Image 1 (tube, one colour):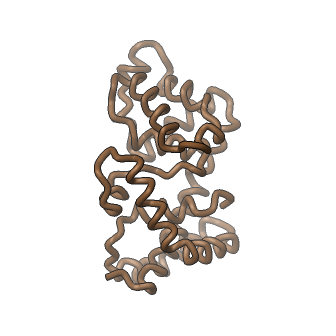
Image 2 (cartoon, rainbow, N blue to C red):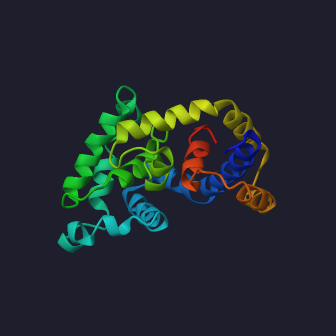
Length: 212
């Protein structure tokens, strides 16, 4: 059973974990996708694909091997999206982008990649669809609508604790300080034996404050 204290320790750890990820990786990808030159976008999207281990799901045979720069079709699609596109029906809007990416890469299943790319581009209201998060939330594979509903319900159940913990993040000024705090919190967090997957908690903490 997940006690309030166990949840607090886990949220503290994973909010720091994601803040560190944001400062060292995601912030660079986000800034590049929104403000970078075309060449910079290609460089950073390649780095992001490697970091998130999704490159194999976007085979070179559909871009580089037929004369495009690596991930050129991805940039072409992601460049067109803006946050307001997702303000009314987020799930349906994500599916439209997913369909475009899928067509560009041979009809492959790209749901998780699509949400990761959209999160890196516009963040809120995107929630990253991750297989481990899905299993933790006990939703059906591929059911993005069910996943979003379950995620939001879980977030609402812990929203006060998340807001309190994330409000403290502004006092952590650099990655060295974050790493020290992560080390201090590691043992008590993993001793909690939580029934939640790491990615699920990162996702909750990572998207709770878009101004981090």
